Length: 168
Image (tube, rainbow, N blue to C red; front, side, top):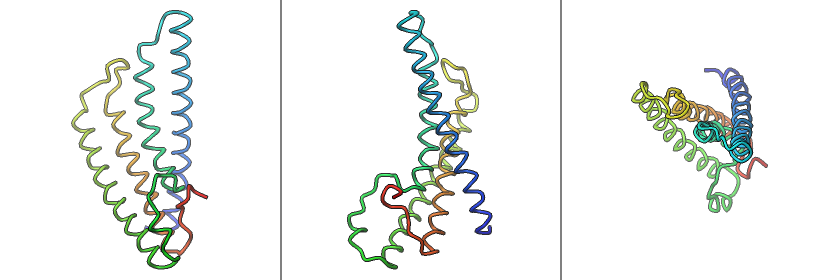
């Protein structure tokens, strides 16, 4: 796979991921606000709003994690890393952590696929949508994070500064 192709794939997936995050968050806000208004003003709560908000939060977290990974916004314990001088040791330590992340994401992806296949015939209680649609967030999110991690590995090999301080 060429580097240019990977970069174009990353640009498309980043745009799509940001759109999914914004859409999921906006939908959660609208649905929960509508639920509160309906319950207090009309004494007629939506039976499905809490379930939809919960499932959208799963998608928001899994897809949003890929966005955060690229920007270096995940929680890190980097005291030892910051004490190292700039150079190959720091870069190699970062590459080692990215290798561990890639390994973990591979496990999460495979586990997510297994979960989907195990729940193909199940539906959610209130919305009656297939539960695999909710669980699909696990392999989708882990795949997006895997792509971003590969992009970070390429960035490290290019010698560019890696996002480590909240994307700043």
